[in-house]
Length: 511
Image 1 (spheres, rainbow, N blue to C red):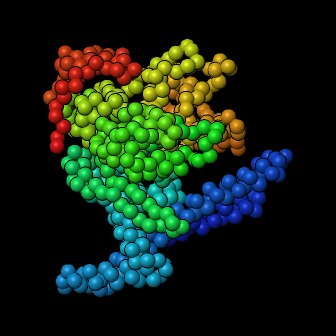
Image 2 (tube, helix red, strand yellow):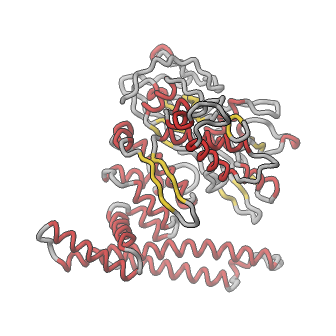
Image 3 (cartoon, rainbow, N blue to C red):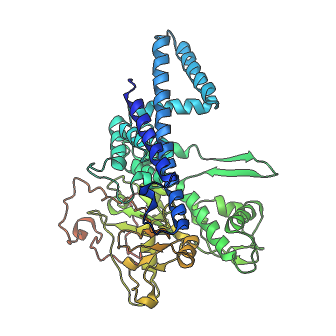
């Protein structure tokens, strides 16, 4: 490696610092109009400073990555070819130890940095360039490295181009990768990876399911962590059931937070012999399979019934029929194996509602209504359109969110998908108690947000793409029915109440 990349990064960093210094000194670029309110100007300078520091941190991270990769390559060359596997391991340990000592970090952290630096400088040029330019953060770069592990070079290049190359054949929609908080970027990158991985999700799920386990880790102050690694449908069902039960217990006389109630409910279900004298074993009901999750007739605490969780399972029609192996989408989680989706539907799991997408384009349907109250179909379609609370960076599960008219009903706003959002309770309050305001939406795109300072923050868009159409089935023209071919009506007037009369005699799940 030569030093040109390091020099370019250092120069960009110096330019960023110069720009930041100009902002802090109140240069003409930051002063705005001469009559600007001094307090507003201070706030604007502070925000520009934060943005400049974030870009500078990304560029420093790129410089650090470059230096780590250069040192590793130089040390390998100086050491010469290893004469045995033991010698090779020893050379790697020496390099890791050197970097750990220089940075005053653990050898584990140093090893991770070296591995990430190698991936970024050899296999992820677009990611490294974006990090050097300060358009993505170090966390985003690490996520890209993590999500391309075990992908072949073509798959790695395609995933990177999807998010970082605007000229790619199928670029990501909505916010640029760097404008997403890292957790949301990981979700989108992982979803794309699952869809396009060369090994089917069915095969990978079977391997991973063998690693299911329960883990316990003591913590300070008499506390401990208990976590379970489970198949996604079971984990999502447990989470949604505890959340809906916790919300049912909230009220004016309840002092516990939602998280505290959720934890108390979980402990009660796992440790109690029965719930409110019900006589049904809790352990059996919670761990005996997904069918028990969402059952009514079980009470929590003072006899409050546990509401049914309503989890959407979005399934490409061809995948549902067993003609393709495309992953389905489990609301609040992401891609799941099609066999899991077929099993949930065929077994009649009442808490899981199937949602079919047109195999020609995956396009949603607009549904409108002239009354104030939303239909069940509209609420479920909002969950499909947004996937979560539409506030930038919020990951709140769509089941917990509240429908909201963007233009108030009292001011002439209609109850149609283009005038509806579904913010979480926190951001719903933010909208109605502060100067934060949502922007317009469409039937396919959630609303963005405008802050009190006038900045526009776009919402994350679900990264839809058309499902795969099997090569041995002719593609019908737009607006035509495929019912004669498949035995299922794929017209675009599908009943969005999701009570579709679909034959559930599906191909058996691959076990």
